[in-house]
Length: 169
Image (tube, rainbow, N blue to C red):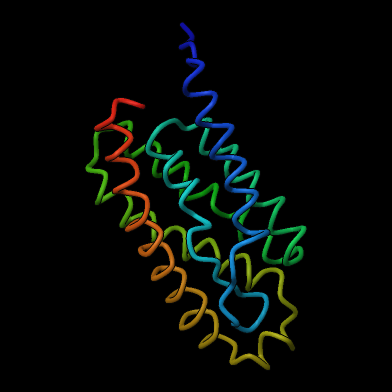
């Protein structure tokens, strides 16, 4: 039994994927030591898609991964690709009926861990050591990612609720 995806969901998916591509290319970024960056609202399309449809969420991750590759390079792009981890877990939690707020909160930790792993695995140890090593990974990458995720959730939830209230979803 396969579920048909409605035209409306396909259009929302296309729009969110386009936004996930455009935001990293055009929105301002906080000046932080590379390979770390913060582009506020860059997770909003992915978080919104995660609340709507799992396939849509995967495509938004692909869109942002490509955009970050073009705009900030391979390590930042790998950080964006790691978002697939929190998206899959978030979609599974939502499918099981777990509260949206709890899901978004737990996903912030998975999100931050994914980014720490990506930075640790793909940043040369000398470069990582020059930035403070584990302090950089856990203080900056982990801590700031959770903060960034929460800020983007604060943007996402009212948009999601407005779309539901207006029956666009």
